[in-house]
Length: 451
Image (cartoon, rainbow, N blue to C red; front, side, top):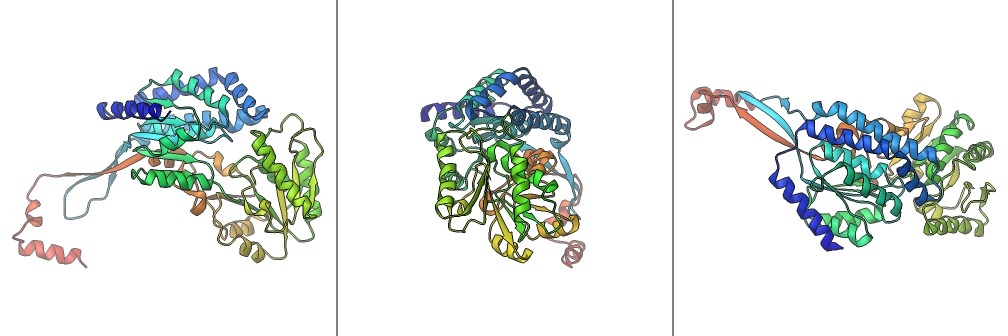
């Protein structure tokens, strides 16, 4: 299988080396074709994702995958002519000329995408890499094989084989891709695997974007409403059965209000069932989630779980002790710990030193903004969960253990571009100022420049 990786890489690298940078018109045409192919194959794509999750709520695939991608395509197509233009920069006096930044493609971009949003998290970086003029080598997760096969068919339909290639297979294929000398490597997944990817890429000095995860906190201030704000928190937690990297991982509520919050959360969670609740990706995920709850129950922790004929119904766990796996790991399951606090400082102290992918604060806007500013994370929101991802103009990325680099919109175009500095000198006698022997006039100018 590693030979297949090498052959694909050689084909893309050779094409990039021989061809001129693709004009914006060609890139736009490819992106339009991708959007059209997605629209025409919508039912097949929805079916593939549904088969992987057994089931995937259709509305979640339509909105969080296909709808989001179509919006990104429209935004990128509209903005690309502006993004791809050279920009003028200030010229250092006294040297006359023009200073510019040329956004140029990096070459072959490798994308290692995860299983939890198998279309969005594969195609979003691909869209921006293609927009920047690159070739793309995509390796989707083996844990969502039907979606991976759908991606193979989609990309083959839209792109020539020397522009974008999808490789399926297991961990050994992803490892082989991470060891290639690439123009850029883009990885979405766990922090543990992200470290391995970064170490492999370092051997070839390949620049890497790491979109990882972490334990993203949600904080309800004393004025927050369990019914109003609880609906948003429940949606963010139980969307995709909790298998979302920016889902609220745990919720802090003022001591004494926990009963109202738990009742509201379970009421809103119940609304997902039976039609709009997604399944766990596989038996491994079910076993892990079940184990988290069993450990909590074995320690006499208060676990409230909806009764439903599904492997892991939504659950709320009240004040689990910090040594439980539930409190040490990113949960990635339909389980929400609810933690009580006396003062906001208690919350901030508990979250000190963490760098999750997101953080959320609910309550009065001014107080919530102030509290959010004291929580470190890649992104965040006030009185909302996950929705900072919905704006194509906002960069999305982590900090610290939740990753580095960012994408979406113009920030993503820049992530996959080399910003080349170019100076075009004007002709004239000014060169004498820079060349010895230096005249008295030149020396006076240099002294003024030095302050």
